[in-house]
Length: 350
Image (tube, rainbow, N blue to C red; front, side):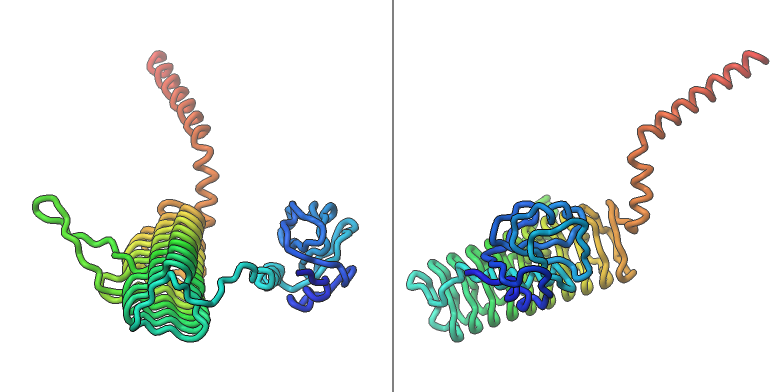
């Protein structure tokens, strides 16, 4: 499939600066370009590649002024990353699953499947599960009893959805995600053993949520674990029982949220962030990677870093001193030595 630069510009609402008939067959990285591809420029540190690229076209900010001649056609847009997202949508339809129900799958007769459903080989849909139209399940997907899945949902291979959980419309669930596994609940006994506390709640995932590969979302002990509309979860994330993640919150890989934490809207969480249970976090908060959040965050749109978390700018100021600790210690010991020598000298004089 080839498109002209002018066609792509129309697709992403851009303005062509150069040859509108440049042919484009695929996207490529700005530092690893190939002929007949399109790349994008948003980060100033990559500007040098603009002047040597082999790409046919480059998506750039509308007000960008090159310092040298650029051979490629420029497509100027208001927001480069949003334009790239729309462009990638266009190129992402290769390998789409065929919307048929495999004869190698097992669908309970009491399950309710709407129109245009795809179910891959060796997938299982249990009793009273319901699946909305235009939803596809890849191979080896398990949908438990009484699960509800909405419209236009894409579920990749190996996903397991335990009983009674609810998935909204337009969701994407990547490979080996587990939704509705038991929360971590055990009661210590007098003999040192632990008695399991059965988890009686569910997981509710609202519309337009994307969940990365190998992420796990535990069902509530009582009541639901909730992932609100528009949330984006990276790979390898742990969401514990009765957590609530607010609308349009994004969480990067290997982060973990302990039980009953309540996260507000539009929060941004970096990789390997740890959030303790039974706290609340205000809308718009941001956490740098590897932050440890040990108490509630009440200030909206605030930024945090460190273990335990402190305000971002305070952490940067503290880090300047922290990384200089060896020199500070050396100077302190030198001062102590001089002070001891002065004390000894004073006693000798007496």
